[in-house]
Image 1 (tube, rainbow, N blue to C red):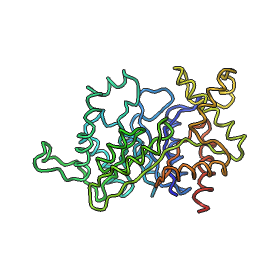
Image 2 (cartoon, rainbow, N blue to C red; image 1 turned 45 degrees about the vertical axis):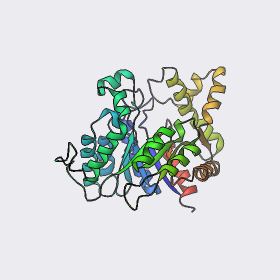
Image 3 (cartoon, helix red, strand yellow; image 1 turned 90 degrees about the vertical axis):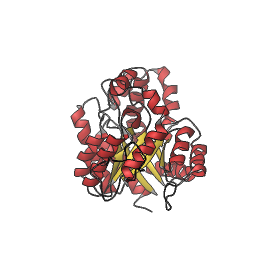
Image 4 (cartoon, rainbow, N blue to C red; image 1 turned 30 degrees about the vertical axis):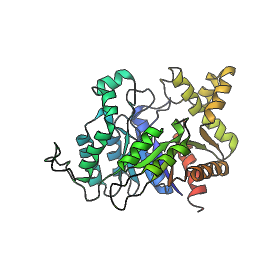
Length: 333
């Protein structure tokens, strides 16, 4: 089984944004040493507690401080941007870091309506136009624009020897169908979806249309997982993530991920049932429990790879979580 990391660059309540971004780079280094396949970083705009608004900048930083780990966006929010510029950015990264770069593509706004309006015009129209935008992006990335295309005379320089690998990210059948029709690898965000992921991925595989002769469908399933030495400790450290999620739903949480004690102080009796519901979409436990749950998900989805997102207050606890999972699922295969 291949394992990878999705990082959202969360800011803990005792951190600055600069410190959080440095911890993301350290997590990538740890992931590489532990045997994880790839490290993707998310794009968010004007969301308190999340530090990365420009994955392309972070990827240059992370790529320069790692050696073989695949790096990518999870995701570049394509409706905000012209495909030509996206291709230029990721071609340049692929030139700097040959054979290591992924372009994860998403259609979400990644922030508030106000931030969306500040970023781009006609966002909803661009979402509707995603099939055409993706096709143009693929032309630029693969350097094979048809001669009749309006941009036929334009090249997304520099052209790398090994092009970036595009992935489409999503949480619904709509995104799965688009990935299949575009011949793209598909990353399903199970941790953000309340839909039937098995049916969504089956639809993707059934509808897949390869762009090239040797293309085959590829599936990553992204899950939220928190692992610690004991079940009790895992439940304890998971409180930071759970309470921060609850705070954000209530329009709070501007200070970032709370410490375990801050999370305990915040909770009211009526919050306990809400937290139990939130836990249903997460994997929380000791190494053996997490291994079992991840294995079950991998079999259920027949996924080529599992990508893990982990939010904790302590950077050390976060790296330890990934370490314990890697020791169970990678070093014991």
